[in-house]
Image (cartoon, rainbow, N blue to C red; front, side, top):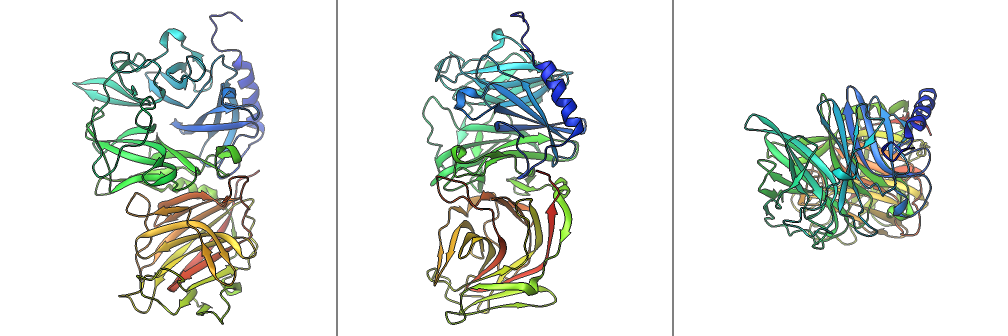
Length: 536
């Protein structure tokens, strides 16, 4: 093959894979991963009624130097995905996270790469007319940090492109990871660096990134309702050791930006790497957001998955949040009977507390009493009841209903309600929605007492629901697949998480679903379930 042909022989490979995908689907959840190899840092694009998922990819387990491919999967509904395969294969350089934007009748892909081992300071470009066959635009288009303002070896990685109109002309702004990651272009192809935009951190502190790493890992940037929303992630930040995604807002792509401290943490985790990134995906109806997640404690100990797509929601206060996307109704397969009368009260024994589990025509009521003053949060009365239904959690189950935390003494008592994913007798993962403005997730052990260790805490400053309003019904949607789960309350994302609680392995797939009440009553009404219709 001649040096001038930059396709590296992927056309025949892609056509073969496309024919294979016409004959059979590869679908999985939580929601998708490739049938072979491993992917990471996905980017979802919608075009003419179809979703395209691009990601960095390695054929077999290996170190990061093996990411020299771009994987593609397609979907007609954003839920059921088909493997297309590596549309860029075995490039002579690393291919890191990528993004795709449109310029006229062409699509331009950019991705991070390395100028030499250990120096991730270059963005490289590819072009396509059909989103399947890609041509490398050559090293003459490689983009490096602008030496007028930045060290040439400083990080430059994956650029989110925002088209805008200025003075009646179309202009493009690029937001990439790295100190020199703010760029501009008049044609969407040729880029020049700009000084970093001004940022007002307010009551938040800047991310603790090294000088050559830049602000944080930029996931995406998009203009919504006349405001520019820039989202990016980092770890060991805002009192959390895990990976979180945070939101900056400006009136224009040029800034100045400010940290949206009222809803700063958009998504992510407090103590572990589970759910990462947030990348915008405009469609003809909704503005969606995709991320990715791990089934293990970190990337090294589990598989990488695409979780359900989210809807970008800007509330009346101008805060960006992640909502339930109606397209995920396609996850629901056959209904599964939920028999609330067959609840097993697994904690406590009646000798410990005044606790009970009763069923009425409305649903399930769990009492955990005697109620204690809200300032006392140790040895709080807790009751856990588990459904005897056998659900196929390996295949995946969708639960819906309403949840309420209430109590008799409404002035002094803070009740909590939530869910318990039983992994083995006396051990599971709890999701607690407190009526004092906090949500918590972590392992719960039930012996002669309750031992709960929160691994994730959602409170003030988070875009996700921080607990629930006491004495009020809230709707819930709970997705459980293998050891992974995702919860929505009132159609807003609470968290994407898993049951892995130790660094050296992957957590258990739950055996049963349970319900929790603390310091009062938990009411669970209209509980329904569906088997996920995703195939292995």
